Length: 219
Image 1 (cartoon, rainbow, N blue to C red):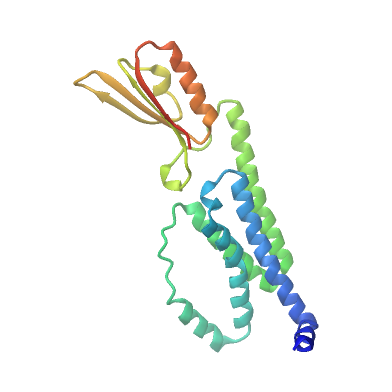
Image 2 (cartoon, rainbow, N blue to C red):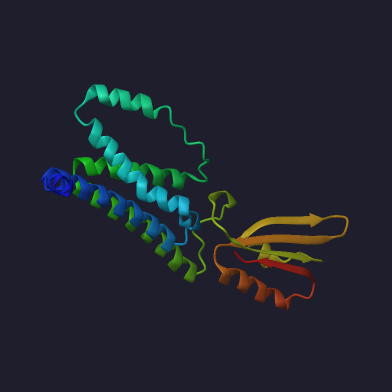
């Protein structure tokens, strides 16, 4: 039995297929690692880890199987059309990542160099975007707005005051501003992915005597 297995893997075509399969897993996993490094916490779960690892190799296998066989291709399309992904996608970027993983698997079946290049470009774009935002924040520039629909946890500060606070109303982190006409109280809700931003807001509030309450929730 061992001789049969050895002789099977001794085939250069089989070795190449296995190598490309493992390469598909590594490329998908590298994108997941890059997303985690840039603090995209929605990609840190077990389910996303396995999705990023398995989806490229599954796509690669399907593409290899149906290559050059029109009848099998039509049958595979019909079979795959039965599958429904009922898990809601939290944001367009997540959908783009799934499409990228599928594209990597397809590209590997044609030329693995294209797959390597595509993965490098994706990882570079993710890292460059994060570094650009990081540098911009040093100059107090906020490039991206925060959305609670994106699946990322955020740090929140809520302030209750007896008068309006100008710097809060002008803040790029302001999500909600409520004025209670009956009690003449002002409520502010601000959020940021950075804990440091929230801490800086809290320190500035120490100079205001009209603050009734401050509530902070760190992610």
